[in-house]
Length: 93
Image (cartoon, rainbow, N blue to C red; front, top):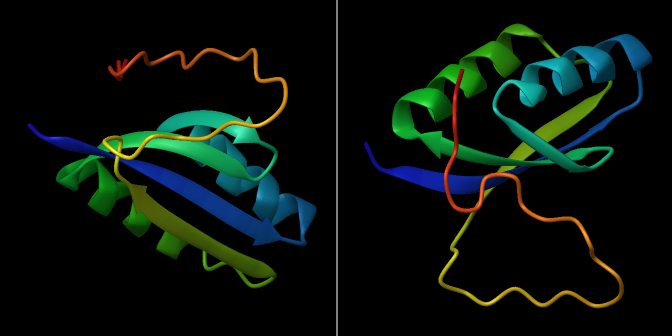
């Protein structure tokens, strides 16, 4: 099954809503900032994630998914000593 990489970005002001979103996203990827997650998702997992996020009925902000292409070279400026835990592979347990 082919998977694509996504950045999931959210800006939610209510602590309760923000915490629920964060906990859900931890099951689909890993956080790279407080409100940004990298997720490797198949079409099925993407649909599932979107459905779960929509069911939360967020009232105090938004969530946005960005698909990105790994063939495009990333540019990192500054100190970035964090290694990608997926190393190109995602393991769903």
